[in-house]
Length: 128
Image (tube, rainbow, N blue to C red; front, side, top):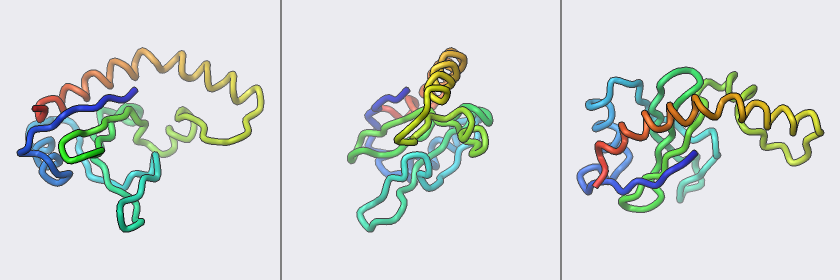
């Protein structure tokens, strides 16, 4: 689950958007390095993103794709839970891992979509 949201000019940097979300939201907000996608910035360093966390299983990651557009993705913020329930990035998976992945996605899909919509509405407060 992901979405692109156009942000007001008042919040056109990661720091400004983070401060706005921290003030207006009652959910846990943090600014962290993007360990989920391993994105890098222009200097080759790990890029930062904003994490809005609802629980150990549900959060969204927000980062700028251009000057005024933020991309948000659903993530599992807990690293241990992400190892069990996150998407596998292995190149070669056996049939049991493939089937288990489909079962996990089927079981978690409803709750993830509900949490994503709720967390997306928090970021929409800064939308243009």
